[in-house]
Image (cartoon, rainbow, N blue to C red):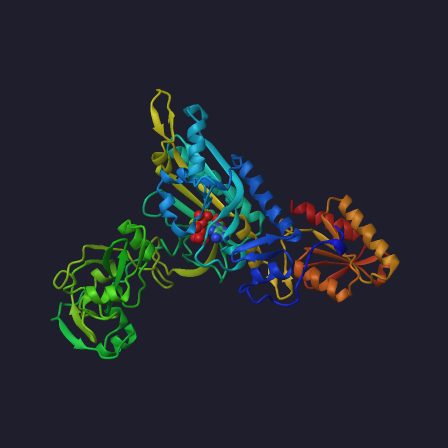
Length: 566
Ligand code: ATP
Ligand code: MG
């Protein structure tokens, strides 16, 4: 490709809307442009990279037993009614009506559609197992679109669905997808973790997320050197019991004026924050519950939501807190509370805890479970944090941040039951199919790759997803010999199977070099002063120094590197 007429509007300045490196670079390198919040257009260079990522996904899905098909993005309401998800998706779903007033949505994910398609076409055990996938645009009206294509409202997803006779079959299909995902993210040169994930309240017997390690990631990953690795939503730790053996003391109500934080209250009561139990009021659908965790802990809302089996969960509004506890926010406690109390196991094992008194500016010391209050349920409702003990081996846990690029999920019969997706077994008996679903955010992958492969000058594409493998840069566009030689090298590279670009723009060399670094071509061949002697400069984007090579050497080395990456 000759760059003189290529649509690659690079930007020198950092666009104000972009907070993170990948977003800035995708705009600055002219890969994409924003159309609306969370909606982007891919320009030629960006589309090339996207197609490369797509190709990797497709090749590995095919190699691991997937069959590609393509569903529509415009989907009728009825398909989502039977599973209840027309309701569940709420405001995240883009909804529209046709001219006859019939409801449609733009598909946020396709479990129901695939299930119905298989229900209509697969009748016998002889046709199973089957794993179907598509690479298709998804729509989600995200509450907070941000970070460019990491959380956008229109994005490209690979979604796959497996259909098996039984759970043993599902285990095999799931493992195949697990293997495919490892190949995909390895080929994209990502540094990732495979993390045990929450399977939600209703369905699923197992779920793992593929997380690209990144400080800007929205997910927290809890891991241990023994191999334990889980999303914070699900991660466990050994209960750290504080003061569990002490003799029970008399309850004592103590004024704590102007003490707002746990630290301030602890100072007042002259206790460690770990001697304190906080009581948080939540609204779960239509009911209110109080949740207790140790003073220095956070409530894990996923664990709580799974336990309650509710659709919506949020901290109670201030006026609800006042109505229920009789005190302003910050003074809730379990003693005499009228609503259901749920206690974390660390709270349950603690003696003589300090709690709010359900009265403004008052706390109670030496409260003991069983004697002074009785929770409806005791369990693990806290976040595991760095320094906690690993639930598997007891060593210290660590945490890091990650971007979820893929998710594999043993759905079981959640959708096949709801939609009646059955087959006839050897005995002619109807059985429900057992399903798995497997997603990859293809556009999010691009951003994830850039987050991990960039420097202050721009993107450093891995060869496998680079829009072009190499760029040939003549130093002076006014030098006809240089231009002719550059074009010759460019043609020879193409003939050798290299996806090459020729920077034949009438620009200063500095501009061309800066753009080459910003766009991140893995290899740059510069035709300059010594070109008359048959010498060019060969530079890898990932390395600081250039080397001088003969033209033949430079072409051979480039072709070699490209081949090695395929
Ligand atoms: P998240 O927790 O990040 O919202 P999710 O659990 O809703 O993701 P899935 O429904 O499992 O995501 O979708 C499969 C994949 O699609 C995710 O692993 C992610 O890579 C990608 N994805 C999901 N939502 C978005 C989005 N808004 N923008 C870009 N990619 C997305
Ligand atoms: Mg997910």
